[in-house]
Image (cartoon, rainbow, N blue to C red; front, side, top):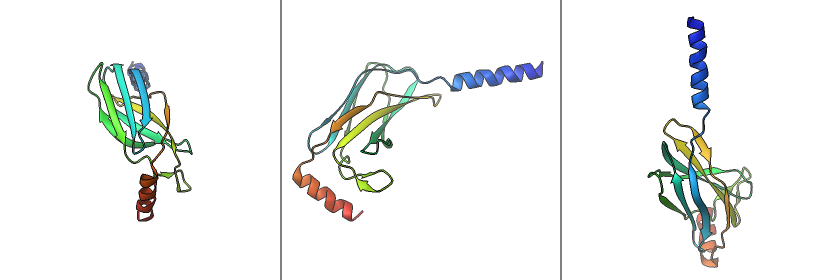
Length: 141
């Protein structure tokens, strides 16, 4: 009897841990203004959601964490400005990322379950002055 209870307990824990957090987004978009990339999204429904983690991928298509935004509840609009899209190292070879970035949201629930949003891409056309200044700053990092 104890063995059956133990097996059932393990099955329940495994089932609960395997469920992804359910979040419905109305939209998720990225726009470049020449100096930074603006991300905006709106949730319709985010039960038990604790936070969003913003991830960015460069030309190597590997997503990396860049920021955390705390969840506010259902029907909320969010925004984040990525001022460091230009000049970031991209991939294992250490090359500087060019101008196309892909973003996604990692959604984390109260029980630590996760799910991901769709991805959005943006061409980040950095002004010549910002590009030159960014390259100078990268030389000293």
